[in-house]
Image 1 (cartoon, each protein chain N blue to C red):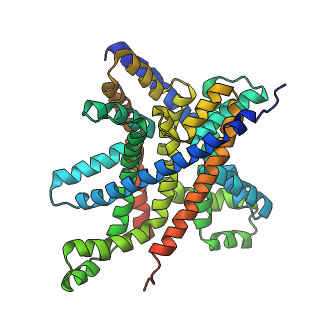
Image 2: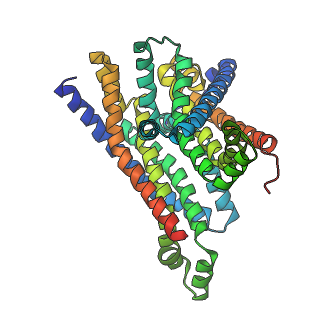
Image 3: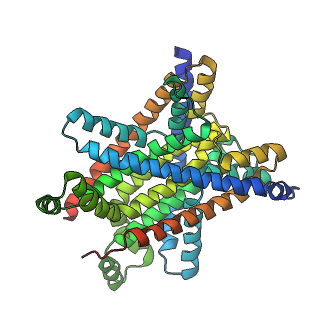
Length: 222
Length: 213
């Protein structure tokens, strides 16, 4: 073995790598927001009175949870143009992340919503709150607080899976590192450094989740 | 899509199964070692294994595969692509299974360990005959959940350049220009592998929740 590690291409590419970290970060955050929206919407539809709607939601969740994200992103990437929607790779990646994360979010949020006792909803209605208000203030917020730990660990996984979006060359850390690698052939050095970057990104993400929960869920339990 | 293309996909499917099985079996051995070290009581070993788990849970599987793939070549090991990917998946699975099983070992009531100690049962027998059988039962739903995640994770071997199911689909779709059909079928094949496991995991979880009550 006569190979010397050479990190110069990495150091030269540092500005674009750091910028790409920001890209990964934004990609992950937008994916999460979409996932939460899909999750909340899906939970409302899943308890719908119409059976076909319920089956549709269950089917959606099971299909997404039992197929790889890479296959999903390819499918969406090729399906959107056929549906007449022309998007750049990065918005496509956000949609794919949102759909994937949304399916998991439906399952997680549903668990929280089911944990709210029926008596609380009835009490809310008895106090003259509208159905939507009951859902928002009495069901959703405590439910989100109850499932916050599992939701955030799912979202850390979502952050990590943004690296798969490089397959359709969305703008994020992995695709930029692949470009630097193909220009310099310093594969190990590039990927090793980027792995450390990902470690920092997921750590920052977890800290942000902690900050958010201490702000938003900062009210006494009983 | 004709018959030949479908057979090409099935060959890819075979490699997906091989990678999943090898990754899961080797990962189980590694995961058991990690879980035991993580709960052994020595602060140094517990810290090292906690660090190992943290690194593998905090970085994307794709990057782990890249680093292992190029790292092994750098050390001078000339391995087939599938072996390198299998090693990467094994390291990944060891970390996740180690964390799952650490949790289940700790979920076994303390009294069990204390009773075994009072009967002067030694560590090996205490783990093998008392703690682990109960811990495995507790861990089954999460373990099956991770197996599904691992099967889906093998698809990333496609990006590293190994022809398993997803990459086979990619090649076919580039040949016959029917990406939706091809990836639809690829997705169905994954679904057929994963869905029974998901159902089994959910059923076990429900059964354990009932018996715990």
